[in-house]
Amino acid sequence: PGAAALFSAEPATRRVLRPMTSFVLLVAALADAGQPPSPPNRPSNQPVHRGAAAFRRQVEQQHPAVLVVGGLGLQAAVRSVARGRPPPLREIIGQREEAALVSEAPPGFASLVGRAVVLALIFSPPMLLSWLAWLWPFFRNRVWYRMLTASLARAGTAFIKWGQWASCRPDVFPTAMCAALASLHSQAPRHGWRHTEREVREALGAPVDQLFEDFERRPIASGSIAQIHRAVWLNQTVAVKVRHPAVVRRIVTDFTLMRAASDLLARLFGVSGLRASVTQFSGTMVAQTRLDIEAEHLRRFGWNFAAWRDVRFPRVLAASEAVLVESYEAGELVSTYTTDLTLGVSSGSGGADPLSREEAHFVVSRGEDLYLKMLLLDNLMHADLHPGNILLRRARRYGRNSLALLDVGMVARLTRREADAFIGFLNAMGAGDGAAAARCVLRFSDSQACTAREEFEADMSDLFRRTCRGYGTGIQFGEVLRGVLALVRDRGVAIDANYMTLVTNVLCLEGMAGTLVPEYNVLDAARPLLDAHRALPRPLFRLAMPLVASLKRVKDRVCR
Image (cartoon, rainbow, N blue to C red; front, side, top):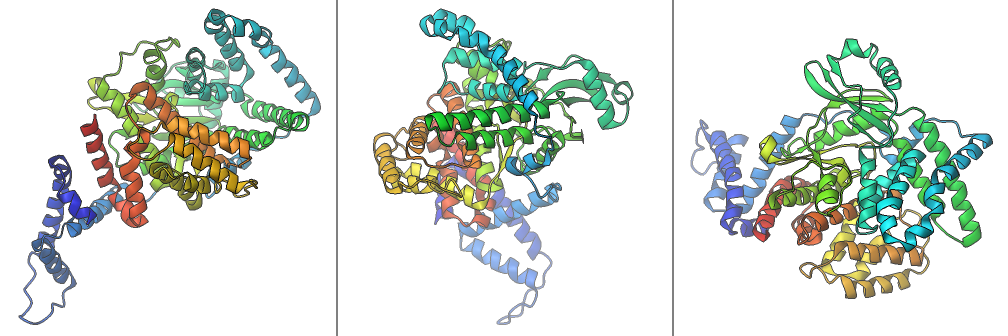
């Protein structure tokens, strides 16, 4: 019935299906051609001929479901042959497991004390002037946020990463603060040329001037883990990512201090769950320091999205623990538009023309498609999916709008149980069912510590009555999620790291949508894919997803 409804849909939908239908009919005709007919009243003993004849009879009886399923199956088979086998990937993948692959001795007492003193000195200027920033908005917006950004940049990897995340959350932090922190995406502290030269020589086995036709000594960008140089290798422009010196040791030291501070806060003020969250975040950061693991992630994401012509991941050319050589992806960071242009402030990354309505809608809708495919099909989620890691290649310059995703050092490998629990939560939001949503959230941890389950379910039902009444009611997705997280905190509900990755990513997506296309409703737009996932068996959904995604894009155009 669903397939029949598709064939009776609007002309735009039929245009999407027509090439697929023609392809199926062509294959059926080729399969049937040249086969001798069976004698009357005698079944054919030729399987191909029997299958083609049966297929032709179904077509003659106008069974659209046969056309759809057959077309999807053939399309999937052709795509699978074109992609080949998935790239080899170690058994251990995901931020929790990969952290164990990084070996670093725990810091000594003297190192911890010395680092604590250094951090106190680094953060003393913004801390001492915080009272003035609270009283005087002009000083806070023009001076204090920049001081905070500079302190985070000097403090090291863990603090830079937090600043990068905070810069993409204008729904949580003040706009001017997000604008100041945005510079941490590409202008984190840089290391010297001598370190880059030594690491490249050790990783690739030859000096830089022998390997590369050209190598820019000045990095084009620098992040919390590594910095990136543009170079020419084998007549192609490449990006060379080089890990900062002593970054692993610094991360281990900083998070040892954070865990000690969380234990102290728990004893003095009864703050529960802080140590667990610090431990999860430290594992996430440590896993990012192995650039050869990031290369494995790039290969797998590239394979997963090989059929998407408007989505790219850098292509890996060479990799070691400290150096990654990948294809150079041109474009402009989406954070440039979300911060500089839409918020009406300057983060120092200007130079980009404002996005057209069509371009902004493409960024948001395709970003949602990416997230949903990773969640519904791949069970492998980019764990740092904020606008600072998404490049836009604009049609006016590159012929078509497309996205390139960067910095895949952090991933979340979802089990079937984790994916089903979060998808169930999204479906409960779409149905406006607070009780079902609460039951899904209680599955967000393998060791759930919440004892007030009935009270939590009642609170969630009350929240949904006020803020989440289902599809088509103008749900403010971010507001609902923040309300859910507040209830989680109040009722002591445990949430594992992979679920927080899913929540953080969808909040970044919702914030990007609210900034670039305010009328875009993230939950309503996701409904076609979520409904198809719920209604179809998993193998059939895998076949049908390209078609459903095409219908979603048609719906988006009509609504726009």
